[in-house]
Amino acid sequence: MFSLLKSFIGLFSTDIGIDLGTANTLICVPRQGVILMEPSVVAVSKRTNKVLRNGEAVGQMAKEMLYKTPGNIAAIRPLKNGVIADFDITQAMLRYFIKKVHHRNWMYRPRVIIAVPSGITMVEKKAVHNAAEQAGARKVYTVPEPLAAGIGAGLPITEPIGNMIADIGGGTTEVAVITLGNIATQQSLRVAGDDFDEAIVSYVKRNYNVEIGLATSERIKIQIGSAHPLQEELSMDVRGRHHLTGLPTKITLTSQEVREALREPVEAIILAICTTLEQTSPELAADLVDRGIVLAGGGSLLRGLDKAIQEKTGLPTRVADDPLTCVARGTGMILDQLSELQDVLEGWDEHVY
Image (cartoon, rainbow, N blue to C red; front, side, top):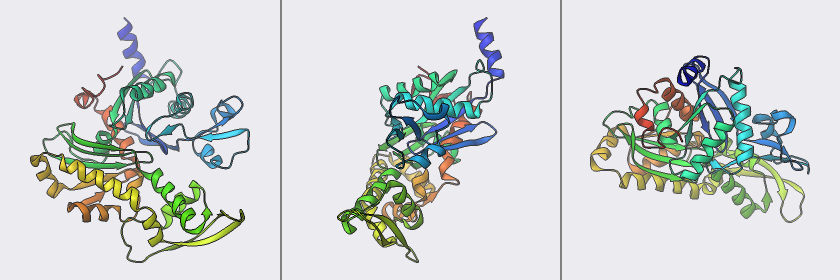
């Protein structure tokens, strides 16, 4: 009787896939695509540690407050390096996002698939599961981010051939060689887009004695950042606070300088890719000679990163179509073909806790 009731409720429930990222959270609904993309930021009262305005200060609205809040308000990013750093705030954020896309009565709770870093611990995975469940999910699955990214990028991951994906997000870089629906070799590196921003902040302070915020650093990265020499180098005026005088000031940065600032995190990502290749079996490595490497995630949009990787590895490297949404789209495709892709989840976390 209970199983019949669950099946009946499932008819009215909208299942959702979630890319719970350090920088952004994306939600995908099967056959509808990505219907939500919001920054993973929550504004809370410092006095009560509660989300402001009944949950409205979540996502884009909260990001606009980041680093600009008065003393009684804090804009928090509750995930760090791809895992939950603040459980209660993550739960509140998930509840808000799920409610925003799941316009059903409370009893019609959705099934949810959440993509998580492949290097996540069982304790961290359990925290993700519990946060989603308490936020309103009826049943929760987790799937490794590189698997979801590979599916979302359109790679034939269930076939007996080698597929290599590097998903460069905000908090982690996930590198994996996938075959027959499983990860053959992998590296989960807690260096990614956030480290690009922090590297630029450090460079400007070290070389110009000027302090800039992470929001400014992100704009620099987007406008003139690169990992490989550009055909036409760029420049940008940057405003910040002089470290010695404390006064507002303006400097001009070039793309060559930003490339130098980004050198260390970019080299760490390339090293992770090379290490994964070294650990790959000769048969799968042979497949990659022609198939190459596919890049996903927001970090893959850094100018020339594909060229820098190809130059170092000798393998053809390309950025996936719409790399920002690959992981989210992959979770939606898994939900859409859950019976066929059940083996993808097998052995990862026993389906569900």
